[in-house]
Image (cartoon, rainbow, N blue to C red):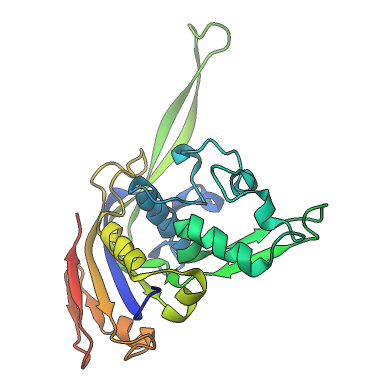
Length: 280
């Protein structure tokens, strides 16, 4: 059974002495607008959701390089592989239809039926320029800080190994490391039953998303994000009582007020329940 009711949710995230999402076009500084409001992009948040789902045993199509479990060098290789993927015949326009291919890839990979995916293949003997676009029922916005953030930049020395047998130390190079001293970020998301019908995203799938959101940053430590520097404080979960939902997502998300210390208040909406889930 596919998703039986609309669901809205919000994430309240605390950042302390970490670079939550560096901008490669700006020296990897934490993302911020001209007013100093920090941002963690939706792409970054979906990457962490995929990683936590993969660790929970779910099949993930868009795997990160350091977390690959099947050794596939590219997405097309993974899709074509008979064991890791769905097989090349799935995308053979002479043997199947786009609808049949969509159903098969959604059944295979959790992130495809949740977020959607575009499968684009050039002209060949098997596919005459086939492109399969799947629109997922789960959407999440970028997270923005509730106040301007303070970014601290530190100059560091990086050493590289010398040539030859490695016994000689190479010359040092200078670099920069950036961090957000402290900040509270909020992200909003929703799950749409009408789109879930097309990908077969189910109530059980929604519960799996609900289970991984409080621990979104567990197992994600790095030099830029040391262990304990990123934390989900609260997950706010609004299950509606119908597929259409009692209220628009804009009104539901607007009922949440987050304070500087990360605490929040939710304005009651008649007939709509809200569940507050503590982060890990």
